[in-house]
Structures are given as structure tokens and as C-alpha cells.
Amino acid sequence: MCSIFKSYIGFKAQGFLNLTPKEAYIELTENNAILLDVRIFAYTAFKKFDVPHTIFSPLPDLENQYLKLPTDKALIVADSAGLFSREAMQLLLKKGFKNIANLAGGIVEWERDNLPVIEDINERLSGSCTCQLRPRHKTINKRKK
Image (cartoon, rainbow, N blue to C red; front, side, top):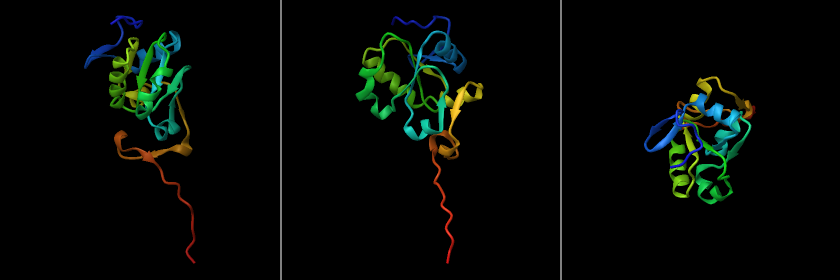
């Protein structure tokens, strides 16, 4: 597989090139790679990767949207914790994409490495772990009469 990613970055796991958040950040900011965020809207509304070039295409829509993705740029596929991005990587490989890498650990590890994130506190999520996050219910103050 021909790739524009440097051969000395990342690590191979399950047949995919995986980049640490710091490696991905360098590729995104210095080498004009594109971040493909495959999280659903509820997750991206709360926290977004703060990098120059990001494309949002939720995993359920990717099958119908992949033709809109650039094939001449490196794509770094990301999600919340690296679970669903694997499915996206499989799909993109089947569709002929070669210059793709997975963001190991997703936005969770990205934040742990203190990389830039845009956060909208009005869209805060609730849940005990990443796989259980849901939008918080907005409470309306009602008085009993």
C-alpha cells in the first residue's frame, strides 16, 4: 500500500496504520492532512477537534458520503475512543482509499495529550464512560401549584 505518511510514524494494529494524537496533530497542522471525524452529531456538538481541516461524516452516513472525500490528501479517521473509526477504516480501504490512518484513542486520548479542542458546554454529555455518553436532558424549572 502506497502511503504519504512517513514510514517512521505510527504503529500497525489490525492491519491499519494508527497514529498517536501527537503524531496526528503534526500531520494535521504541518502536512495538511484532513481529520475525518466519524462521530455522530451529539458527540461533535459538545467537543470538536480544533484543527485546520476537519470533515464530519458520521459513520452511519459514510457509505453514502465517501465519494465526497478527497483522495489526494491524507485522511486521519477519528471518533470518540477509536472503536468506530476501525469500521470507517475498513470501509474506506474497501473503497480504494490508501492514504488513511486511524487516530489511536480518538478524542479521549487527544484531550489527555492536551491537544486543542473546541467545547460547547451547552451541549455537554452525560454518562459513566465514552460508550454510554448521551446528551444531557435540559431541565425546565416548574413549580408545583
